[in-house]
Image 1 (tube, one colour):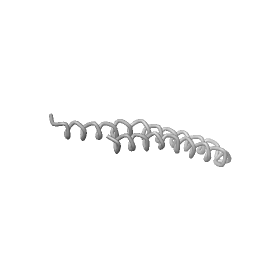
Image 2 (cartoon, helix red, strand yellow; image 1 turned 180 degrees about the horizontal axis):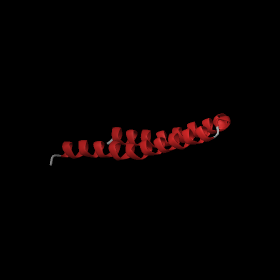
Image 3 (cartoon, helix red, strand yellow; image 1 turned 60 degrees about the vertical axis):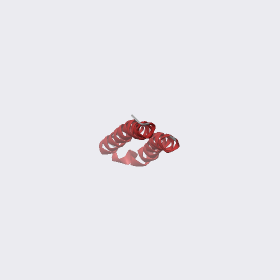
Image 4 (tube, helix red, strand yellow; image 1 turned 135 degrees about the vertical axis):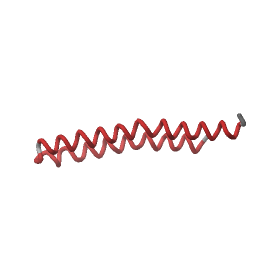
Length: 72
């Protein structure tokens, strides 16, 4: 296998594996928030901000994986 092909494979694995975890995490956070709001609609304001923060932190991990893929 040529070095160029190995670099391309490393980039694909970095962004692929680095995107799976955050995608699952964001889905679980959104699911839990919607269930919480569905059970107690008055708490939507208290649930919304922590939900957005959790999603932003999970998305930051995916962005780190993208940066690693670009630097390879």
